[in-house]
Length: 233
Image: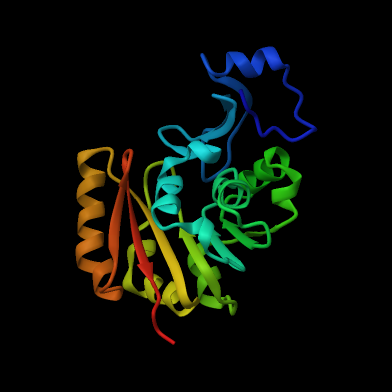
């Protein structure tokens, strides 16, 4: 049994055990961007759900855990990581706790201040201490940000939908310009439904591969993560 609950979140060991059988609802709220936001303890992990999608699930968030393992992230020295689409900070938490990135500075950007508030409430203090939050539109942030990153993780959804501007060549070029030499870009797309799979395929072939000719895709459960490593000096 395991749980990454912050000290301020009081859940008995009995309920933690029960969460392996049935998810325990810890918080339910909404925002102008997300009519449904629910935090659950499930299998000893904190999970953030929207109406039809899981935004975050600690190390069980296979969407990024599998690519991190495939890319041998634990062997890399990531000084700066940009996360676009925060959830409950699954990406920072995984990198910090499971992939040996204890010195990394995380920049976490989400347009929904309620999502960021939930992160501040439920994420472990050690991870929060390494994370700078920004409530902003990811496109606008990328257009004005002047920092460079060793890894950029794009996980932008309103429920199951990624707004079309985040699938534009202009947005991808902005991200490319912010990558350090050798830096990695991981872009999450959903494939769990036929229409989402078609959108993912079209975006990958007609836009992502055009901006990043050396890109490749990693399939996870219900998702396709598009990967590019910057080799430009």
